[in-house]
Image 1: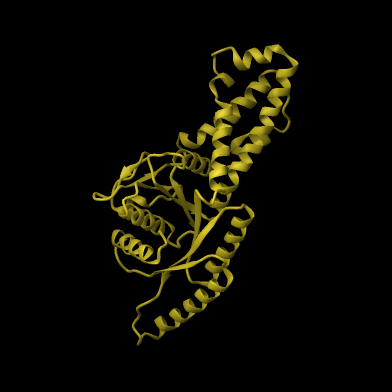
Image 2: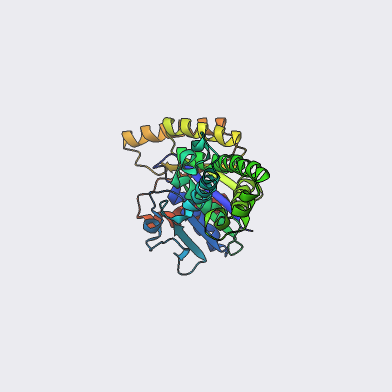
Length: 309
């Protein structure tokens, strides 16, 4: 099975560039690599200057590198919602009153963005076609909901299945409806398959041998604080963190520019604070004023040099 790498952090810090660069670095080593965007504001196509669709698309002529972007409004996420909705509808059709129906509605506990992301993770994280799968996640809030989602879905689905089991025990009519007809309803929905898929996602996310998370930040005070909060939440969720990537670091500057010098000094203070506060390695990526496709190659070079692929 492939190893998975998730990049997350505040919007605008450069997650897509870092995820794409990491994927490119692995592909340069000959690994068959897929980079997946679970961010509704997709930009993989811009980074690689190539069309990227809802199926894995080659984005590098001379390397085994592929990319995929999925619109959260597609059927990917809806597979989960359909399972919940059909289960609840069938139970209610039998005359069982569900006053807490909202608690059994997938759409009421999660958004389509996170559902789509879980579906993508569940699909590609166990796909032996790939050696490495790199996920470019949505901004921090969406990412945390994504990481909690397998537990939420499993708990919600479990409540619904428990109700179904109790009804089955009361009337044989229910048994016939759930197992005998082909008119739709629960017969058309693979509840066990859905739950197994959710459990596989949760197991993979928490397995340090299979999955690593990288937080991306800028060497600025607000970004440092948000990254601290993100790492705290990741620890609470038992998500293995590989490193923190400090992006857009000033390195070569004009010494006669007092503004540049002052900014670099502030960044140096933030990087020192980050190194002191974080219990994982800190990898720095320079600020590069170059086109996106050149930038991703340069960052891939940096990751290879630092051993952060």
